Image 1: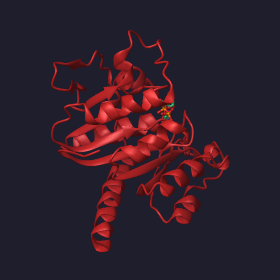
Image 2: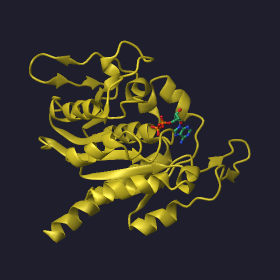
Image 3: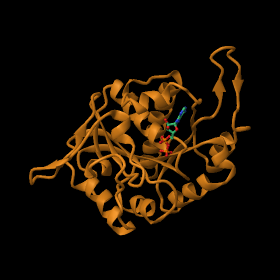
Image 4: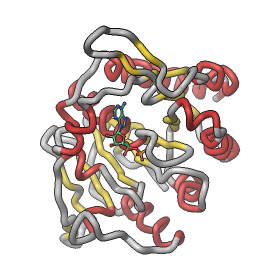
Length: 258
Ligand code: ADP
């Protein structure tokens, strides 16, 4: 599949659900918008689509015979999601793997994305056939893995990372989410889920540790209110800096190989 007028296609993945993959996708998209990049989000997490709710956008998507028009969030992120295809937030898309895969392909190739600097793909979690086909079929420039300290101990994220690596998708880096909590009263920092191993994993795979994001009680209410685009933090800004650097480094090393 061709990238068309899209500068970079970056997947955000995880070993399992609930680690903050979708939140990290939405936060990076919004931070890139604040930096005046044009950004699209392809919500490929078909069983748990959460991008529309976090950004407060609704469907349906329209196709006037010239391709699907993506929705646009209030901060100017263009978006497609399976959520736009069902009547309400509680209705699931009950499709088998091959159909889901076709939908995701359609969401990439059949959408009028226009000219964009970045498309971020909120991946389905895990190593099932859907993420497998996405890895194989979308023209990904790289992938970022999100996990939490306790997720890591189960080694689940490494399975997903190994799958991406085996399929020759460029691993851009890892993000440890819900890494620690800083008490708003006394300022003491606690590793709620135990000791972090993220640096070891980054080293093992020879990729950058892009960020350790804290548990922030302000994030969930912002996302629940459809205001994720307004959330900022120094850690998010540093994550975005690190990601942009990793993308640039990956590109220059590919040029060297050529
Ligand atoms: P996933 O996409 O991996 O399933 P989500 O992004 O949907 O995970 O996050 C799961 C829940 O955890 C959401 O309610 C989200 O608001 C919350 N969450 C994610 N990251 C953080 C964080 N750093 N601090 C506080 N809450 C978070």
